[in-house]
Length: 523
Image (cartoon, rainbow, N blue to C red; front, side, top):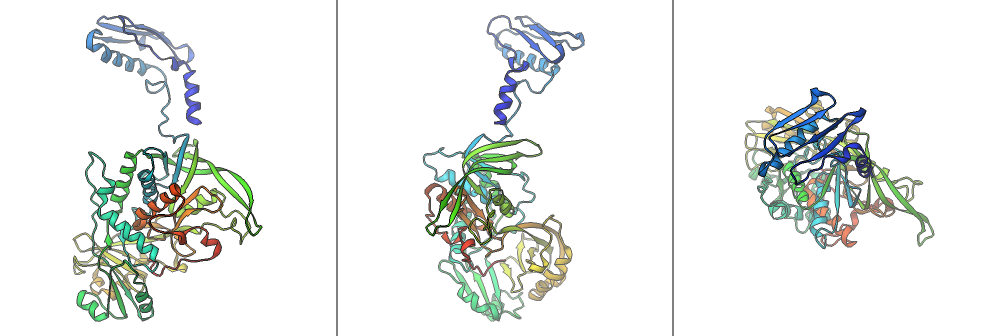
């Protein structure tokens, strides 16, 4: 709408008439500007052309022959010189509107992180026929400076207590190992995801040992170890307080999150996906009052239009759409509220909110010359403290999730260094004595899209806002499951049901029914 207004208004304006060209020996034209600024010019096939204005100081003279093959090039130079003295911008009389989103898109994906990009990829990969679906990705942070994807530690594991989480990770690790079969782009260099298959090592106390034994699920290749076996394999570990250990034999490790993000972005652009730098501020929808089988009245809504506020501007562009995918990560709860989700009486489906909120987590990088070597896995202590090796120079990444009482203010990404001293370092040094001499080199903070209900993902459509789909709420394991989740959402959009992995237990409706997906291995 805004683009159309700009174009129509400007075409009627004085510069819309432009300067014509003619294949004969002369070119005649007239240019008018504000306040009677006029000029006329004549360009015969001679050695010089002068453009005269009412102010002689602004006359432009060009020298050179216009005949033969040089004519087009010389005329281009003349136009540039003329434009330099006229009010306005480029020679093209129309404003540049390329920064605006399109006026319509079949699917609008809110959030251009790895989950949103994965949904875009699979929509284009699975569409029939090719080019049938127009997909727009809206991302407000084009630098990804606050994105959960690039601020994570990049781990991927199969050791989950929920079978669906195991299946999601198994597919995703296959995707990562064969990433160039999925994301290769002609004439671009291959991606190097820097996958490090060192596995995860989960440690359990007496209290957690029974749960750990029950967590070994079909498809996950895991080795359970006693404290003695643990000491033999990893002699640098102090096994005090450890009753059982679970070590991933394959399909686990860590990778470069930035490479995955950029690889997905590059690929989907080559597939025709559109991008817009802006923020979704409003949904325009219609509603119909319906009655359920039990006689309860419900209001079914359908989004018809998404309003996108343009980055660093007061402008907004309405985008007509058929489907909206909420992949806004830690901000997806706010996006859901814009669509009216949760705006109803408490205890009803209409009043059920998307329980995903912003949670800040710290990551610390430290150096320890006497620390564990190249065989170091991704270690998770019973205290919740974790660490992994970073590179080859005895550097390590790690941290610990705070308790509910310790939750930091998510309003900024400042790092609390006292948290490392008080909560992270003591259990680290107790579990790995060499870490008593570590030195912290840097630290940063990132966001979890924390699902306060059961810390598991939300995938699929909303039951009342019938054309809004979710890919959010993974509480720290969204990056590692993104390739599989994107495929699942695309299947639901295109086919109306999950095809490869049944994620029905991850639907929004569980928040209303109270049926939690209880995952014990949340870091």
